[in-house]
Length: 101
Image (cartoon, rainbow, N blue to C red; front, side, top):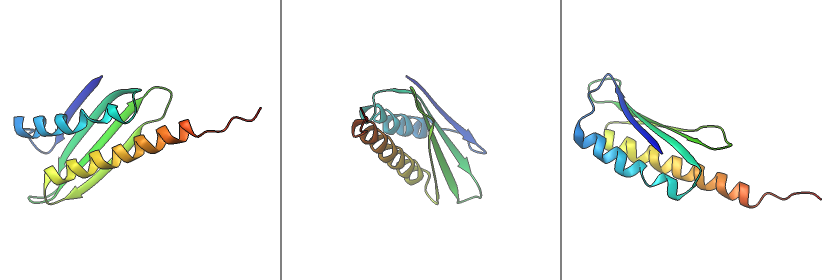
């Protein structure tokens, strides 16, 4: 699985990189066909941050989540939580799909 952590208008420190990768590493637990995870951190103003997460999985479209706030770590948490929910919902949809015979 490929994991990319990048930043727009912000330098990604080792602490941010380690935090985001630790949080994002839990995502394949919710859906085992995850191929790549991309976390993008962004700084809008001096005290406003945003985070975006993109998950690519086999045989599906992308799962995208965005969050904005005053704390970058909180934004990363919200993005990962949204992606967890999207992946579990998708897995449940696949599991509960009824095939007409």
